[in-house]
Length: 333
Image (cartoon, rainbow, N blue to C red; front, side):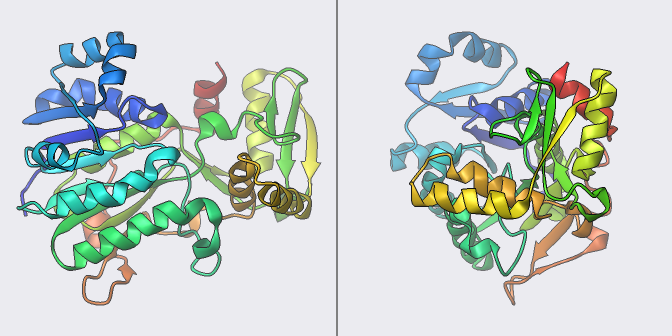
């Protein structure tokens, strides 16, 4: 295996999380042999200022169509690493992109779009979670190809995006600056609350860059769980009150009530049902990374994920660790 990943192609780099990943790479372009984004003609036309900035930073802009297999294959052939930041609406495209990458030699490193939640938070319940299905199919596909030696992969798995998780997007959950409330799902007794590991957009980007820059063997066929903080909801509330300099009125919603609303939203085919499911998973403790290893590696013989402390011990040493209050300040200030 190469001692360094040197030619990196970013896909979905002008979307919500892709934008942050792209900007993490811009100051580091000189440390790679080649960095490029693959984007559409529409993006070039509608985001001209961003595209010009990218070009000025030394990043190539390749204009194309992800649905054009010949074009994608020709593009992929010039890189050793493909980082996908495709959004939820385009996740179904990844399996075919992975197949194209796996048809090339030497084997490519592929970073699927894994950001926003841990889709394997539980071996019992994860497989049936509706929002996880596309990502689970992608994992099954790429892992089968990895066991055949046709591709290698790195999953950078984050907790809920702190930039949006904190802010109220649902009634009675999260921070509502307008009415000075903070909504918590679960018991009022902090001792009985589950921990949540969240990740900011900017930290997600830093972790992706770090994983690309790490020695390839330390991230080969790896599941890497990363976060900006791990805290109970009561601790998050205190952090917000400290940063904002005022008390917030706390609203508590029982988990059973959220579960009931979640079922109703799916029955109604409400497009917002996914948000209810993800919040239920998070408040149940499904994103508590403190109980899980930072890295797991595919055992190519058994297909199981296993720990390897020697391989993982130096991962992410270059990513700054911040306090909860520093993270909150980034979000609200």
